[in-house]
Length: 107
Image (cartoon, rainbow, N blue to C red):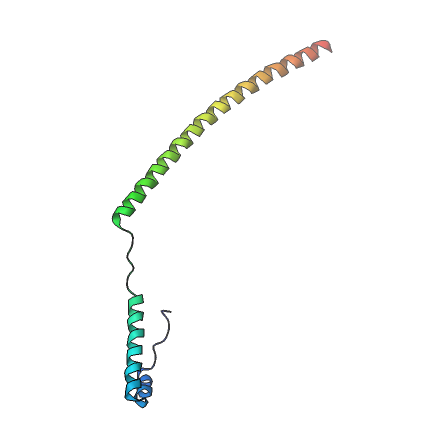
């Protein structure tokens, strides 16, 4: 809409001059209303209040802190799981080595 061409003012005035006086007044009022609405629609829109923005930022920061805490807890749980898996793997190696030694002795 910002790229619409402006109407030819001279042609518009010539067409309005042909009309009767009552129609001329009506046409000018309509053109004035359209221009007023167009100007009113281009006014700057009000943004959110600064207090609302601050509260939103605070709640976002709180949510990020909670997320970071839960991620840290998950990382600790993962470390415990990894250490348990490593212990189980070490036990399995001992059992496999013992089984291989038994098989070699039997052969």
